[in-house]
Length: 235
Image (cartoon, rainbow, N blue to C red; front, side, top):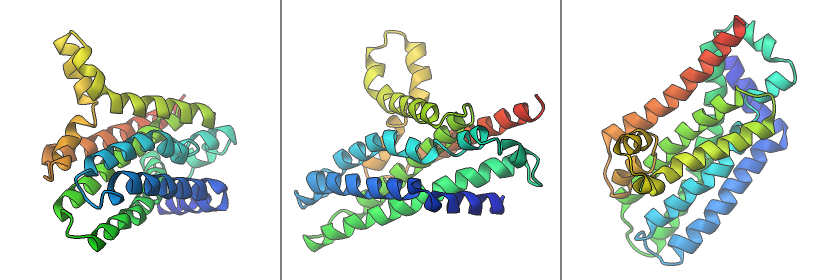
C-alpha cells in the first residue's frame, strides 16, 4: 500500500494536476476569505465563508480525483495494479490516502489565513477550529466519492463531471428537501445531506454523530470502490 501511496503522491507533482489543484484552491479560497471575512475584520461571517468553500469543493475535488483510477484503466496499467503483491483494499487505500494528503496539506496551508484575523482583534478560536474540522471531514468524504466514480470509467472527463454532479447534489439536498412532499423520501435524502450535519460545527460545537457520519460516508465509498475492483478482478 505504501508503495502505491508514494507513487500516486509523486504523480501529482510530475504532472501539472497537483500544482493546478493547489494553486486554484489557495487562490479562490483566499479571495473568498478576503471578501467574506477579512474585509469585515470579524469571524461573524465564518459560516458564509465555509459554505462558499464547500461549494468550491464541487469543482476542485473532482479535479483531484478524476485520474486516480480512470487513468489506470485508460492506460491499461489497471491489470498490473490488480496483480501486484498488494490487496485490492491496500491499492484503493493507497490511492485514497494520496489524494487525501494533497487535499489535507493544501487545506492546512489555507487555514493559516485565519492567523490574519488575530491582527485585528481576538476572533472566536473555537468557531474557527470547529468549522475547519467540519469542512476537512466533508472534503475527505468527497475525495472518497470522487475515487469511487473514477473507478467506474476510463474517461477522466466523465469521472470529473459525474463527481461534480454527485457532490453538488449532496450539497443541495438541504435546500431542496423542504420542497419534497413525501416524508419517507425526505428522510432518505437527508441521510446524504452533508450540510445538515455541518450545522453543529458552524455553531462552534463538535458533534460526534456528525464526525461518525462523515467518516462512515468516506468508508462507504472506499468500500464500494474495493467491491468494484473485486468484481472486475474475477470478471
